[in-house]
Length: 98
Image (cartoon, rainbow, N blue to C red):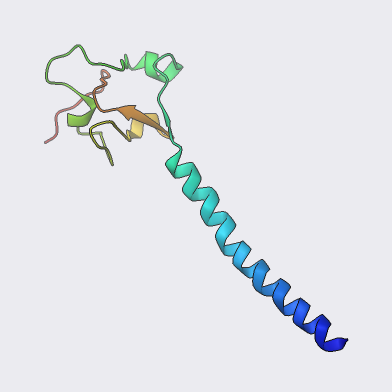
C-alpha cells in the first residue's frame, strides 16, 4: 500500500512538473502568434494619421526605419506596441531607412 502511494505521488509530481513547463510556454507562444492588426480607427492610429493602404508613393510601413520583424504582410512598430501594422500601410511618423 505504501509503495502504491509513493508511486502515485511520483507520477503526480512528474506530471505537475511537465505542466509547469508546458503551460506558460503555450500561453506565451499563443499570445505572440495571435498579435492583432492595428485598428486604423484607434485613437493612436488616428493621431498618427495611420492608413491601412498608403497613398504616399514610395512610403510604406515595410520600408520605414521603424518597421521591425516584418514580412510582406505585417510587422511590428514601436509606435503601436502589441499590434501588427500592415506592410503596405503608412503613418505620418514614416522615416526612410538609413
